[in-house]
Image: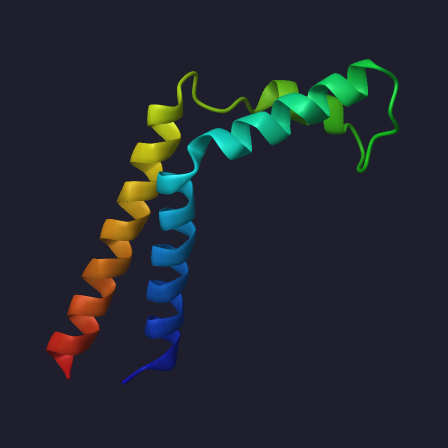
Length: 86
């Protein structure tokens, strides 16, 4: 068995599961950071405020949840392929 396939599959299932179960957490962190920057906080990296505006999250939590479920499905497919190929 290839350990890299297992690592990718477990990572996809783990990160997708977190996104699917807790989609609001990412949105709240991002909105809080945007409010801090508006209040005059220092940027953590070059043009952080511009990046927050240029790459918005989906408008609803369902988009994040669906992306997470897609990652979980991808991880399960990878596990199935790894088990099937033996």
